[in-house]
Length: 271
Image (cartoon, rainbow, N blue to C red; front, side):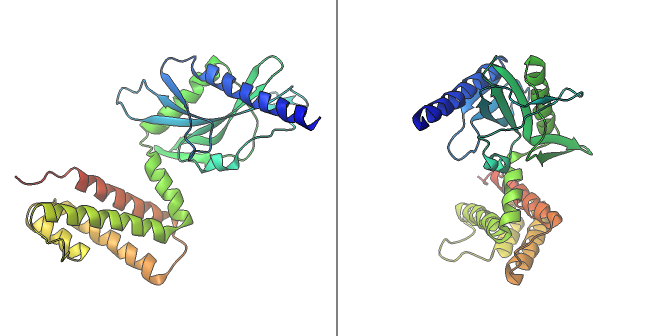
């Protein structure tokens, strides 16, 4: 009997995955791929119709059950299911929007709710994590709504890479800050050495190296203040040994670090 139960569970899970793929590929502007192992969702969906050509991704986790069971249809049109299984809590750790698709095998009916909901608050993008909640019917109109919500989140300036850094900063601020400053040191010293302004064997302290690059016209002068601010924040976190960083400091840290890396990466070497 145990073998039959496992076989039935595997069939339902596989069927749910196939139905999710069918629903998503109803739109020709979606590129649907099985998620790589490092992602805790079943599918990564790329919206290919963005005129700006940016990478607009969201995740989909698919689960299934044999029948509606004790599901309750609320007046507002939402469905509440008494029992759901197979949801990976780690899907909420993704730095992109994530939807949960639930398929009922009897009639191949589909439902959805957000695990990580894209929202725009005061013209700023954010992701709201939901550990529970009611489901909505999944149909063509619902799929259009999902895509519109994701596209609006990206249009508001969402950057999943920065979101991931912010989340990691909250878990381990010292490691993230050291990683950012290490990448900045690599960029600065590398460009100084290529320009013949510094020897590999005798690299200057970072702030001195930045100042030297600005003086020789290698870097724009606008990076001096952000570099000093970031270095001051680095000293505050690292030297005090703090394991907690305020949300404001976390945002400042990531914003300064990623912004400086972007500026350095776009600088042209002098002829």
